[in-house]
Picture 1 (cartoon, rainbow, N blue to C red):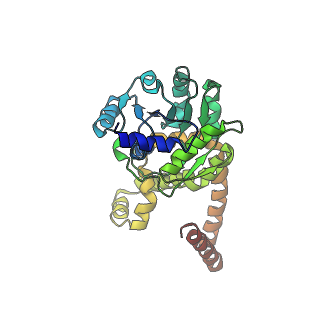
Picture 2: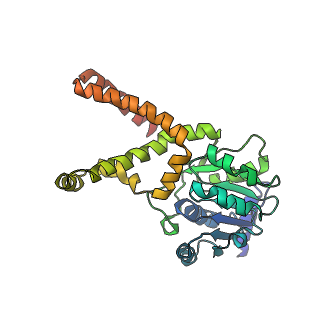
Picture 3: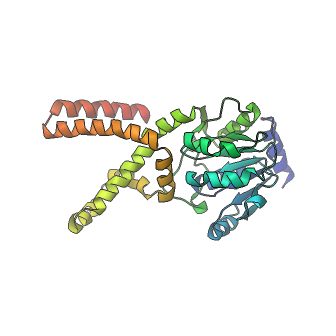
Length: 304
């Protein structure tokens, strides 16, 4: 490391009470690979490592020079790490935390980038030693692409990151994770895990379900009609269904692990959909105009 790089790292660490000499990334998909790129530029750490089960992914990480060490040996990756960032499908958390937490050094901060919190936190908390802090996190950012090659600098700029720590979390560890996300351009909020899952169910998870469902409906159309639908699909349709190209394993796990919140929001959505269907059947001009006017205003208020 150059003297100028070390100086920038030292100035960064002065802003928190904990120094991150080594950071370990567990999983190197879109989020972790983008975070690795950003933090490398920001000189947030002195050394870095990454874990993946797949040799093909490890080779990509090495080729892209995202970290100093890439390996399928979990213990080798986390040894002497001051921070571990978990970025894997939520169904794999339990197995990874069980292996990782038995080898992790005292004082390490663990955080994650998963889209579901309550059930995931409950499933792993028994494996986390008392001298290790877990600060769950969810950077609300992404594209439909996946893998280390899909990451890029600036993904998190001006986005929101939600942290869901328990009430007894070490404040210094919380400050470090908050600072890390602010360093890459995110605004940080703190939320109860259950409330987080309900909010994300309607803002993220159900839109994905709808996108997958619409594309599935097209797949079941008659061959001729299906070809015409695909041929004449407008930009609005393409934009809306873009997320149906997202990683199917990741989204299967997210939906099943946030089942309760999603089913609750789906019930409300179906009630509104039935009202809309009834209005269309009865040519209820007033209902449709009021609905579209109201939702248009809400949409404009959200995206200014």
